Length: 99
Image 1 (cartoon, helix red, strand yellow):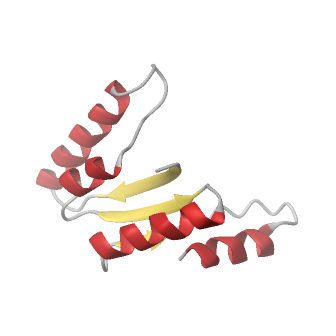
Image 2 (image 1 turned 180 degrees about the vertical axis):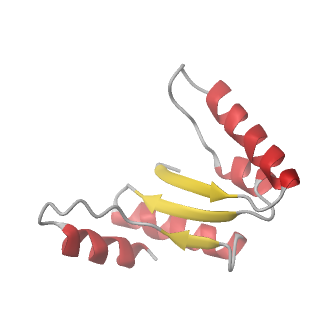
């Protein structure tokens, strides 16, 4: 999944699971980078709220968005960075299309 994501964990057990997920993602690639696979999310983030920041082409965003909604119903939100650079409306529309 070529996107950014953020996870909010409300309880200590979930904190430990998400920390394990981050550790696996760090070990899976070169220093300073993370590699996140779908299985990492499914097996590690029970009880977490996920905020997804899609950063890939529209067909891939739509596939990723559908996959996230199916597995994390009610616990996944879509995020968008607004940088006040004149492209915010286009960025919002593009992100909305992914959902």
